[in-house]
Image 1 (tube, one colour):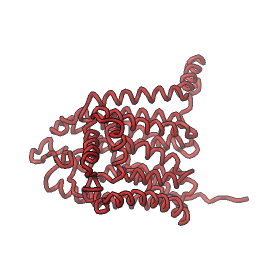
Image 2: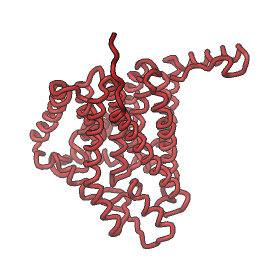
Image 3: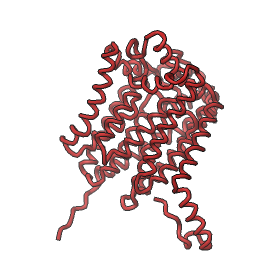
Image 4: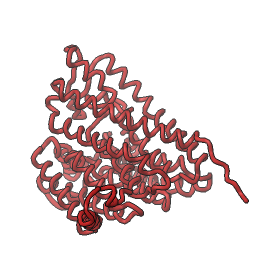
Length: 436
């Protein structure tokens, strides 16, 4: 995707060109990639320990839910309503099976997330034609985002999304099953499921590759819920989310957080039930209610646009799937009244998959270069916002507020760009095929 420049391009000596080519070969090798993987994850884990509870606080909450279930027999979903789908209990329980200490649970959690990402990188690095370049991009993106992703469920979701996108065209049924499993852990991989459904070539393919694998996974999860006595709570996660107010980091909260600089009547308070800071007031409450409707409507409208683009340009279905998945994932952030920083981990997989699978003849570099750079900037601004300047952001300091506003504006721009590209594919004039 990014070829080695020629000597005339570099205006330098052949020796320098040979050195550059040698460096490119080294960094394209598996040993170099795995050294980079280890260094990147070691740095991220070190940062997680430095920031302590800011990063691992949710992991400690995961442990509490699981330990309480083990000790009392009262489990989330099975015995009471919960903020996560039932599938989230699976990864939360695994570390508790191997250790009895909180520190040990933290280490097992981060090791599990690292192992999941290693599997994704192993597949990404083998993708043709630019898997190694995509792998370096993916590692750089995670370093830019900082440690937040490794201390949340989203650290597992990101590799799931990435793998599902990599195999979506050759193995759509497997990709759908994987995306559905991910959605039962946390909703984000459902965006990939929507894109897969919208790009199915016909009704038979839709049933075979979307309905059957998705239904099979759902049947297993719901069956487990019924077996554990949790049938009354298995869908309560949607009600739990509906009760939430506008989170202070959310994209739609930006006008309120900016106005706080000069308007002391705008309040941000901590919700000690769901452990988030929320903007309070009539305007913020109304915005949260509007977003409850806007998010599913936006997801369905984007799915319709993906469907039309796939009908119009079936020869570009792979590109449409990646752009469509990116648009759906960005919509889940932009139209969400929750704006947790770990959500940004969802944005990197479509870009990494596009770099890995793209070709020059299809204009991949032209389509994805700006989004790739923009996504890296968004990741870096997110780390600056959380954990580095989160206290300042909550306090309404102008610089931290500006960082949050810029990050959110870039997310809106990335979504707009994805929609423009989808529209170009959906409504561009098709060149008729000339036969001799």
